[in-house]
Image (cartoon, rainbow, N blue to C red; front, side, top):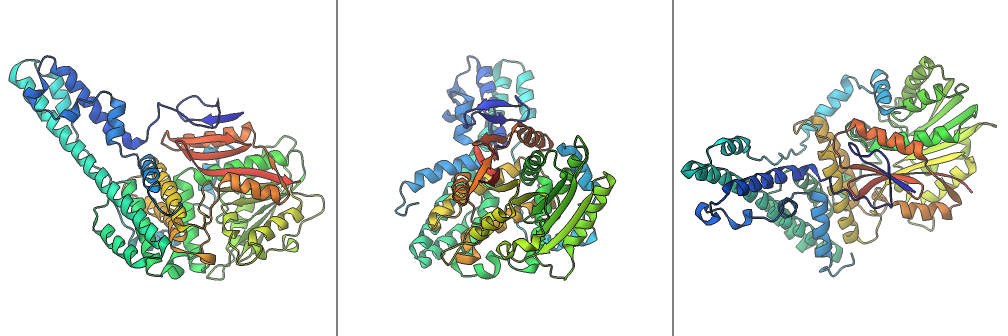
Length: 553
């Protein structure tokens, strides 16, 4: 049985895996819906006054509001999806509660000091492009005036003409934005196809034409900016220095800051942490010695909630060891140990016997079992959040992922929790990868828009930079430099089964935890779905991130 959760509606209900909810639309439909509603009110108020006598354009007499919305919507992800399907057919190339955790984090070590603030300000000064949102004319006053005016003679006709003129201007503006968007998507795909064919001169010329286009406002313009930048880097051969910075120490520090703001402002990383924590908690029920190995500790954001949950466990908390793996720091500071110390302080306040150990490694496949110091009798849990996709490239017969999966098997864990993007960005075909990425990140930017961050909020710029780095790497880089090799749940399932793992079903408690999380964020489009024993978080009908749990066969 699969489950679906939707904030504001029925909490948990069975679903066959396809999410259909006619009540829900993207927030960007709202303005168009309001416009259509006003048109229908005008149509009703006309009574016996003929359309011809008012000179109202014919396209105002739409049959239904749903049709009107579909005609003038600015739903980015769905609209691009339809365009891509049409264009691809003509292409020659194949194509414990969340609230408690939040309070704990704020009270411990997540509010960075002046250094983080200074770093953020310097980042913003480097030139993050701001794109204004669509501005719609407020016609509420005109509507109220027309509804209260006497329904006779010239005054009624004038009021209707005034409101209709405003609506015509509004819909024309939306039409212009959509036309710009159509040209933009056509040009982006033409540029990508030229790169696929090796015709860089035509790709360069196409890119010049793209730069002359007026970018649409809102998410479309934002995501297009990143794809244009990524294509530019690829065409001019600058991907190695700026398309992939993940191997540099400076980049690791930057990524840590962007990771923090992405975590704070939208539900994706919190979903990953809560789901994995619940699975670990259930796997170690009743055990007295627990050793959690985190493949990428970052700021340690995942573990305060697990520590608190273990402190409340019936029968008392276990002895908890946490091994956090992370890259070397540019300053030479022991950041891992600093995070471990703060976690230890938190564990002490809730009376959990806690021990931390940091392991510095440039690459996960450099880790050997002896480095993790597994002790006899302890239950091991291995946790990987958005890390395994970086191990898929190989210039030889075996990829780093093979060594890491073998390492985990040698540890004999009670549970191996994995969270990855629900995408297919590891295709050998550049054009196919580009199309998939354009669709995926269009959906992601739609979802971010629903978080309702102020348009001039600096955090939003940093969040967009976090996603922009992934776009640059997918589009601009190749071979070993391309580390963002996302694969979908089906592909991971095949790989793990072949490597000797068996799935552990994520139960109803994990589903409830993930669903509760969505109450902390605005936007009714977020969806938690259970599928094949795994959980996905998506935007409307598109899954974006998937969590699964495994054990050795």
